Image (cartoon, rainbow, N blue to C red; front, side, top):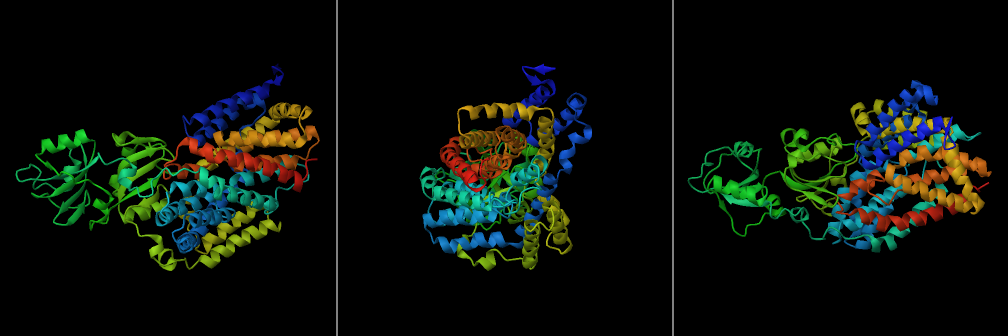
Length: 616
């Protein structure tokens, strides 16, 4: 039985893929949850499409999935050494306040590092450092953060372990191409170097001019979140009913429509709710809330508004309290994603007050408790050094800018970023993993797992840190889409799509067919994530290459590179999403800067594959 010439089983799989694509694009539910639904659907449809329940969950046992889990853990071990942080701090000495040097330092260090260490934690560490570099160079952080993300993506093309899509492609090469056991650790490094160099030259020239300066050079956090009208100072006069009450109790009262952030008295400042101070006549309250709410609070308790006393960063910085104003981005794998701010209980557990949320071009300053946290959200928070340390370790929030932070060029690298005593051992273990895989002494999955084992038993990495380092949402996404790709191949769906691609060979030379396929794959990766794209498109590419008499490995590489280089949308790659808020970017900025880069690399990569591997 066939539907419009398509085998019925393949039509069912196409329908499932269509539903999954809609959910991936709309993000009505998280992508990893969609992937779990795909597993269930494949198992339910199993008797019809020839997929067993074991096949449906095979993605969890796939070597690529296990390798990616291990590489997350190994990257955490390297992060714990302090090497990346030390390098970031040392950049200030090279930059010396020059914008061009700041950009060169940003892209010139991030790219090579991302070839060996997972680029997501690298970008997480570098965001606050690059923000400080921008401040010290008198340049908008927007001019550096987008290149930071792009350089990290480019670096992922250098080695097999540079990004998860490379590891997936290697596993597909083993399964789909006769005589191949996968892809070598450095087999495509020469082309990766070309891609990195071309990409960096673009970012330093054309990209530098196209990248907008969305965040003003001298903008403080209050103005960046347009909170000038939401922060106010109120004086407590004699006779106010608040006199004698604990400041924390006032903040907790249901009839107080604003957040009380600080009590100022005789040059001293006390953070609320941390302080036990009782309010006295003459105290000044720093409050956050809409102007109407502030007016209601003032009138209800007979307070006095201070004229011309605007609240700025300095209001928090110049006070002796440890609490500081900061911005923080929500990473894709944060535990807070999907929760409302009220459910996250940041105030209760971490003494962290959220004052505003920037989501793309939207700024949310009211009814914050009801805001559901989404990946890429930029939060304006008031928090303590203890909370900053906690979020740095947990990774649930990435503190990107502190209004009271020390300038990184004002301290010695050894003081700002001390190295762990385990640094030489951790680096040696990572080098051993890469060497064992490169020399074919061990399969990459076994080498990576062995590296994790040695790191843990030698104390370079604790078991809890190892598990915390894994982006489990990516693991479940992989586990869901891998069997979907397999089902497409088994039911003939990949062959149907390959036939459409092969038809273009009638009027296009083979190299342009590959270029067309590369461009389509790249566009898809910008919308449904690189991981989902590579799983769906590699079986099609290998099948089409076979029908055209072309080298299937060359077409597989085209899909791998196209999926790994997603520059055109903030959702195309996690690092793009991480810089979206801190850079104040618009969606169109990624098209404007990333579009030409993606087209340029499509041509460079296609020509490079043809020159290095041949097309037939």
